[in-house]
Image (cartoon, rainbow, N blue to C red; front, side, top):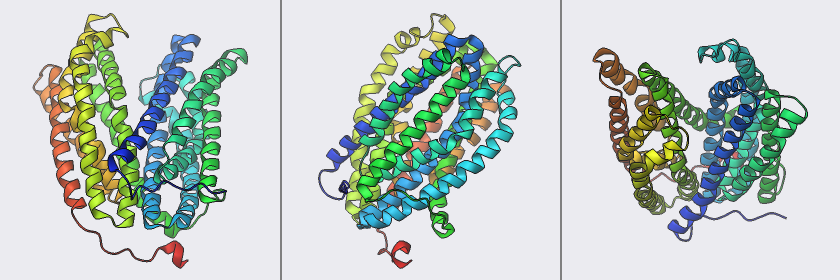
Length: 451
């Protein structure tokens, strides 16, 4: 028996945004806790194991960026089909996305296994730490197909208006990880390998669960298909989205490299402050998911006014989120940092970062909503270009001049981050509204109907 998808082309826009974003944000919270669980159990093994898993986690972000691209690309394509009323055609797109995901994951596994040793040592792993990182990341690369298929399935469900199933999967995964980690790591004596096996096994079960839920929506199991004509359309969405995520990761490396000039304690303070800020931004990331689904369906249906209203409503909801989060960052940052360290330099740096970057908090929200809207209307190139500029090129050039050449203090870095984010948010809003103001041409015949 098929389950009816959620029609986002009718009803209250605010209700849709809130009901979609809350489960998505909750899922992200459990995903964050999941990652912290691995670090916690690695720390119980040894300091070297913790350092190794931490370094492997940086390499693991490459898999995450690939999965994020597959998820966002799948959501954009399928949401448009669902909005047109082509739910059956959405099933065909899901099959193509799964086929593309399998091929991409195999290629990334081969490249990852060949390059992992170099990447681990490039990130500064000492000889006694590198083996732990290598054991963890090898298992993850071998099992990365589970991550990609789970991302494809989650993206398809979001396009159908279902963010609860992925939330349930991430929540169950967290509790399963908390049980499997001690069993594999300590009881069976697998050490760091057990942590990686637990992660891959849980993600495999997650992908099967999400595919089962999709079967109830679409009436049949996903059957991976391999049609390059469809893949080209998918890759137009997937590649820019993946590169956009990758620029965020590389941008973080650049910032840390500049802060590292002032000492490791300041790096630790910045890292803690950044993680706390990311936690406060989780509701906004949930809103990102809601906007992609809502704008995607209405764009596919040709409901131009609802697309614009969805964007404006999301900006207002995001503003409410900022009004709540900004005072927390400004007033309580020293208390929050002190939960992680009593070192005065660490607390000082983390608090300073949070208080200064609070100015840019709504800028991040505007960027999330703008990028989601552009990807939903199948225009992912501008977010990629903007991401490269604001995450890599501009910070690298400006901070090199200010910090290395002029020798200005570390706080200059934080001010630079705020300025770049605020300007980027204004540009993103201007461009997004310009694109959303263009009424789309009538839809052409779908390939899946003509095949």
